[in-house]
Image 1 (cartoon, rainbow, N blue to C red):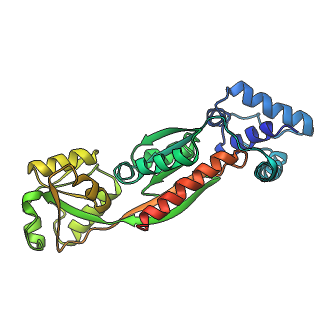
Image 2: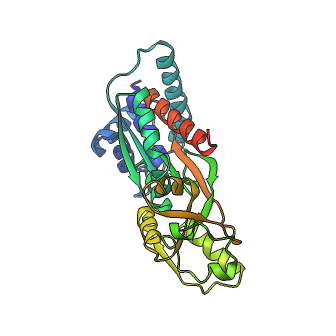
Image 3: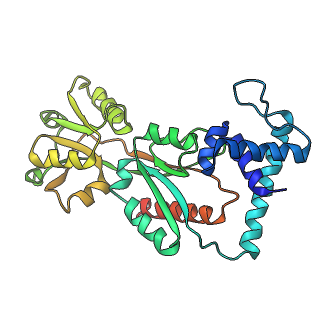
Length: 296
């Protein structure tokens, strides 16, 4: 039994689409269909129900999926035990929200490149809901976002959240703790509307009776830092990102009576049973993220 054909079936079953399975494996739809048809011929049963437009496994397909996963896990174990290291290039498709870009995405990429020189990165920086949709559709292997991704076969791991702080221009560095009334005299900026920091900030403002406060939103952390530096207003930003931004922007962390809700962080990823080097790279990336968020 050709395990590449088995792998094609597994991804089609996980993603519930031949099209998405083909995209995941960088194959044409006809190539994936032919691989599954060859499996069906060898097994003597139909694995996919092709009578309707919607995707559905047959009863035999559902049963075979369990065996297929076990086949691929065994293949990976055999390669790890007896196979020579794979040296040909392979792609790791990583996505992250912008907070990750301004904290540890670049150091993580550098660290992975040193231990796995044949790696090719496909990096995506987007909002949480877009990242979660991309990984659900099989377009990314690993993402770091503010909410867990929902999908069969996707693993979610909660990481340490990011502390959120108010940030002002450097001229405000000597100010004492800002009371809530004084804080509200400033224009306030945060991440784009509907993002976790925006929703959390509005909840905090409503809790202190300031739900009508005007809040400016921006999709770029760099732009927020520049606006703060210019004196436009104050902003809510992750403390870990602010420490990096303070090296090139004249901004400062403000002390305030209004405590901000931490930014949650999740790693979401597909298991890669037939790709040992990809799994190893993902394990290295996850270890880097865990250690960074713990401050190690």
